Image 1 (tube, rainbow, N blue to C red):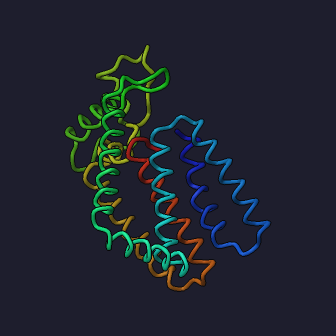
Image 2: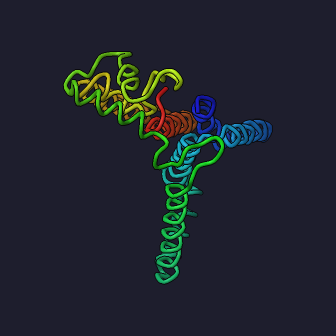
Image 3: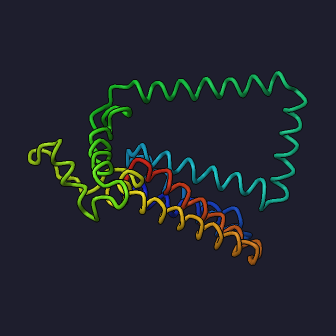
Length: 231
């Protein structure tokens, strides 16, 4: 999970730089780098890492098509208009994607796990149960930094189980150790990041905007991964 998270911080930035680069040699080297990164994330066997990677690449693609690249925006608009003119095809593709997504979700939630993973529906239940108990004990301020493991030990024998130091989820860990004050602080941090990014975006040239897009995509992917892990 840690290897996937740190690799995912770099992949969207490398992809944005690849798209923005005007030098063929640079594009080739960057493309080889992020293809190698994809291999690393795949073999890290991190389900949260794959979700984070998907979000990061989605943000880069969406931003490139709708904001940075005039050519990509024109092509995407033409494809969208073509699909809207053929509503039955549009609805059919939408339904197919919906069915595929639902089927994949059912497989993930209903699977019995494998040699390296517990089933998705129960992979984090004991950690989050302990975090919920810690939050309910002190909902305003939380139990304090580093106190979460003591609540995990109350419901999970240590030893033989490992004394995990966090709740395998940033929101759950914040709730357990910092309570509602921690959530307010996190919300304030997100607002500050958004304001800084929005102001800085307008000051950049095309290359700078591509770099900011990569940074935003990296943070978005990291945030999605952090829903099921804590770094």
